[in-house]
Length: 295
View 1 (cartoon, rainbow, N blue to C red):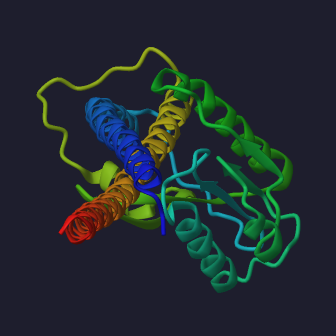
View 2 (view 1 turned 180 degrees about the vertical axis):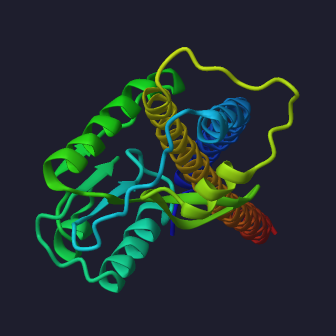
């Protein structure tokens, strides 16, 4: 039978662990709030970029059209995972989702353009092709712009060196305040419906835009900013989803620890009561033996 001292030590350990889990829950909730605010701050900038592209398409001197994607060219894939642990099935879900898409799109080339942002698990090495490049997340939001420039450089290399004009982002995307789901977003080619909408959308101003530089140069610069924002949005969505998953994992762990601690406390009180009963019986039997001896 476990001694009362050992049970007390286990209760102390589980209580300390519960405090640590609560801290991690609070940190995950704080991160969700921080990343959500960062996401909102970029929505207005995205609208500004859209307005710029609309102005160039509708009022620029040169006609700008979408280039047809090479249907025979390779498909480039960028997979956003987690560098950290304690986030449940976060990585497994996006890996499985990517594998299904890979089979659906019949990507069997061992050297197709493939980049992972985060950790490459062993299941990737056995079930999927290994990534040709892996990037790590920055330690704070302030480091995201530098990471995005690395991603854009890699994408430009795919386009120029490997004729890759079909590129997709795979990441976990929030679906509500406390849930997320795997998601795939087409980065290239540009959405033709969205592009056509920019061409025909009403210009809500009496002032017509004017350009000091060539329309193609300006549109190219705006397009770079557009890709920057799309990638930024995907990374923030992945960050939020990761912390949602971590918060859920810590909530489950907290409940299990609380149940385990309650069981230990019940066991402690039960054994403590038994030990008191045994002591009382020993005293009673000793008293009875002493009484009989003296009678």
